Image (cartoon, rainbow, N blue to C red):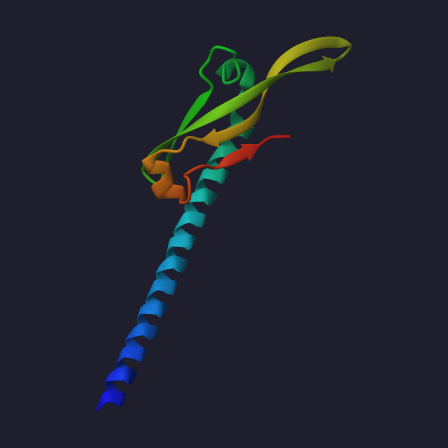
Length: 123
C-alpha cells in the first residue's frame, strides 16, 4: 500500500517537472519570436528611412522610434554620433545612428522577456 503511494508521488513529481520544462520551452519560443519580429521590423525601417529628412539623428529631435510589435507599442531610443564624410572632395559632417535600444517597460518585458531590452549596435 505504501509502495503504491510512493510510486504515485514519484509519478506526479515527474509529471510536474515535465510540464514545467515544456512551459519554459514555450515561453522561450514566444520570446524568440517577438525578438525576431522586432529585429526584422527595425532592419526594414533602417534600410528604408531617409536619415537626412527624418530628423532621427538631429541633436534636438528626441531620438526615439515607436513600433507596434504584436499589438504592443514599443519605444526605441536612438543614439547618434557625428561623423565626417568626404564625398567628391567635399567634407561633410553628418549624424549617424550608432545604437538603438528598446526602453525597459512592462510591455517590453512581457514581449521580449528578461529585462525587456533589445540593443542594436550599428557599426
